[in-house]
Length: 145
Image (tube, rainbow, N blue to C red):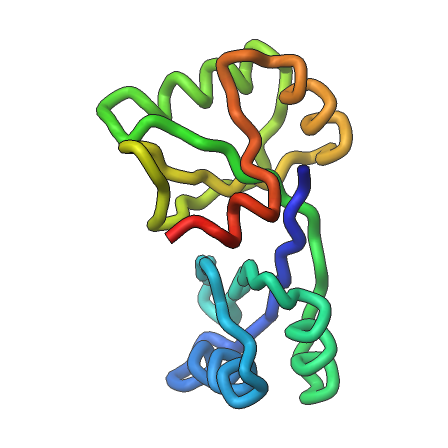
């Protein structure tokens, strides 16, 4: 029910985002979705890949500062208010969202949101009992086009 996300610390300068992406491309590793958060001096490139362990190993071997975190993917209606309804449901469950981002694919007028919670295991447990939210497991996530 959880996905593995790789976080790569990069300098905030030209070329620093492209370099880890090229390293992964050269290794034949596909990036399914990503986001970039930045500060004045550095950025955090967050990547989800089906081959996350290989991606982690390749980046680590190239001396990148890299870590792995668990995240949860949730389906959301791709309509006005879809995100709001999901966030309200998370609030009712008492879940704290550390950060989130959207994935560009989905099916049947639905999208996928990626969430990092302060306690991922507890979040998965609470979400499993929440009928108005649907967790996207890794098999479905990596099969979406």
